[in-house]
Image (cartoon, rainbow, N blue to C red):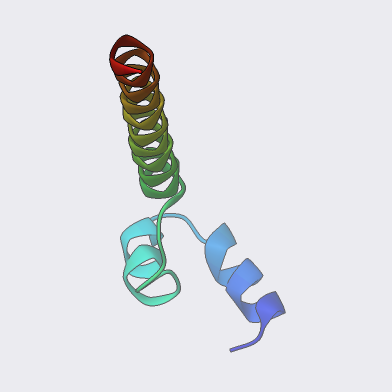
Length: 66
C-alpha cells in the first residue's frame, strides 16, 4: 500500500492499534528516541566530567611531587 493509502487508512476511526502494529512495527517511537537521546547525553556528560576530574587530579599530583 502506498503513502496515499496509508494516509487514507489513518483517517478511518478506531484503527490506531492496527496501524501501530503494522505500519510502525520495528520503528523507534518518538518518546523512545527522546529517552535514548537523554540517556546518551547524560552518559556523555558523566564520562567527560570524570575525565576532567581525573586530569585535574593528575595535574595536582604532578605539581605536588615535582
